[in-house]
Amino acid sequence: MADATDAVDAVDANERAPAAAEPEAAGRPGPTGYLFDNDSDHAVEQHDCLAAAYDAATTQALARTGAGPGWRCLEVGGGGGSVGRWLARRVAPQGAVVVTDIKPERIPREPGMRVVRHDVVRERLPESAFDLVHARLVLMHLPERDAVLARLLRTLRPGGWLQLDELDASHAPGLAMPDAAGARLYARFQRAKLRALTASGADPAWGAHAAAALRRAGFADVDPRPHVSVWCAGSPGARLQAHHTRHLRGALLEAGMTEEELERVRRLLAHPDFLACSPAFYTVQARRR
Ligand SMILES: C[S@@+](CC[C@H](N)C(=O)[O-])C[C@H]1O[C@@H](n2cnc3c(N)ncnc32)[C@H](O)[C@@H]1O
Image (cartoon, rainbow, N blue to C red; front, top):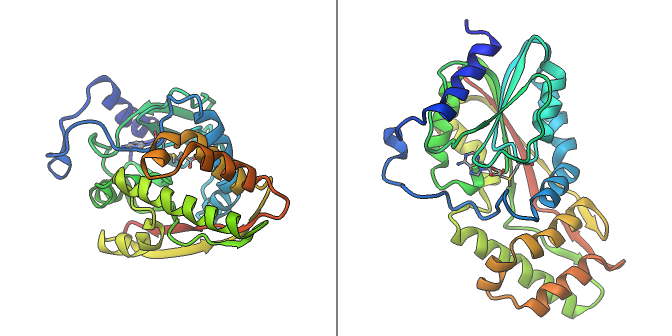
């Protein structure tokens, strides 16, 4: 069986010589429709908010796989790299983590972690190379997610683990607002975000469909677990939403919001009487047979 270094080098090779699109990805030329952008001035804030909101649930679930010294791990769409770093500390130095992203520049390097520019839609992954593959909030953005699942299945060794962490953003109601105007504004903001995501090719509710998709793709032992919390002013979730009003400003304006409404949303999210239900965040684990 290949060791950790072989697996890392096999992904790294894509950077030096990008593979031609495989058949399932052919016919979709051009850039990904991914709505956020790691080149944006807002990206550091986005990655900090995501880590604060979701790293606890992600790492608790990852720990259940038994990931430890010697494991070869692949972190797809690593963003700011917080989960890749957590994995590297568990598996290195005998094991290693490859952290990929289409725009990996902001991922800090650390021992046991190799950062690679890689497009999971269009570029190959090595066969049967990893003990664990993790991706958070990546597949919901990719219209080609079923083809990506087939690729992730093949890059796992038999018995290897996949963990996908994904949202169902279709239900995230305001629970108590300072006033009726605030309640209407919050509902309007949620709808605009769903429209903006959908227009980019994302499936904002994919978290609720991920387990079924994994079964269809041939994974075994599919285990979806939803996590829901209440967001108040200052919570990681409220900060993430305020961040959306900045990072997604253009898309939200196109989806029908105004600058003045976005400013009011920011004030609402910081109001001491703001309470909302988070969207369900699913950690979904499965194994290659
Ligand atoms: C919403 S962010 C999530 C980042 C990180 N996984 C987290 O949860 O903190 C999605 C990430 O996926 C990356 N991404 C988007 N399309 C991708 C693709 N086709 N291949 C690899 N990464 C991709 C983006 O650049 C971004 O860093």
